[in-house]
Length: 471
Image 1: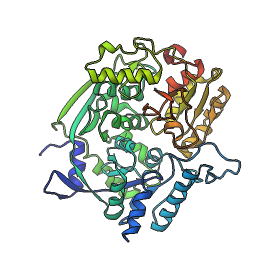
Image 2: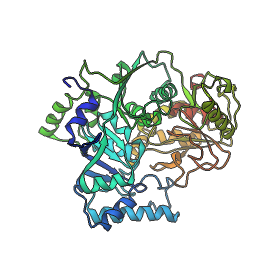
Image 3: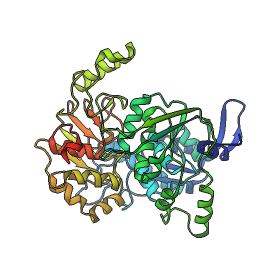
Image 4: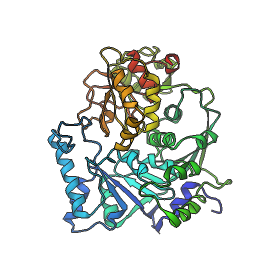
């Protein structure tokens, strides 16, 4: 092909071998490693007597199982849960044995992989990046070909720094118009998933385009790419530009000096050619976009705040009707009812989707001078130690705590019920995370996905609220 998409350019430059079937052996530049997905990979590697081919190309840290409440000893290695403790110890032993770079739980940089990688300059345009976590698509915001992999694939990357993969088809989603006030990248992501469905992106690498994307901060681009997996696609990408370069320049692991200049010159060649042909093209007008909220047990079960929960009669087929009926029952809500005004028990502001400094600022702006509603537990969990320190330097922690929020240490926290933070059966949570599956935040817990500003509004009123009416 004379003209190529961003995805094509990175893929083609990383092909080591074209196999006889539909797969290619591609080289992997970066590997983010955490405690949940890799114990079996390390153990199998040792059993075979194999070594890591390029340990310096990896970066490891603990995020999923780490409690976000700080113990009196100030040592985050003191974990009460025996399974979580075993995972932490296993990862620390494995990185010590292999010489892999590791950010320890007591390091000020520690946090969620998908927050820390970009912060440290480990994530770079034009690279292939993998991790044993589905939300690795986050890093595509930098023009990286990033995707989640399984435990067996983690082992292959450890041993060979390569993977057999099937090249995806390409889809471009172009946003037209301007984002209305108090509407965010999270709302764009939820609206896109509602439009495509949870399988609409299956088999595709999605590139996000349009003037609104070019005007977005890196934090907003990461939020959008993060939720690509919820539309069925493993890869979500944004072409690198000056916004990308300004974010990365002088990051600890980013190129320096002449290498930086060489890197930028290469990165400037990566955007899709003007006449590149995509396998699918979708346009979404955002001029009238409203804040979005999920009502069911799938990220595609979302509506704008002014709309009612769907009626079963509106389902496109019997399968959809059955899934809606099941979701309504689990969530204990009624079809054709208002989503606005639904009472909540807990509020979670955090996760790899929405725990960056920009997200915390947006939430703090809503709650300043107000107080959390009675009988509502609200927690704020920064995505990394650096985000936490930045927020504290700006006084955001005082705004949150003054309003009655709990201010936590960095980690995945209530996004996934693998640590101390989880919902009890029947509890309803306004959450800035990315998934609302049954039991995702705790057995029997009910999750409503929304933006940080919307979650902050729910904390103040004690119910799902249109943030535009509160500010």
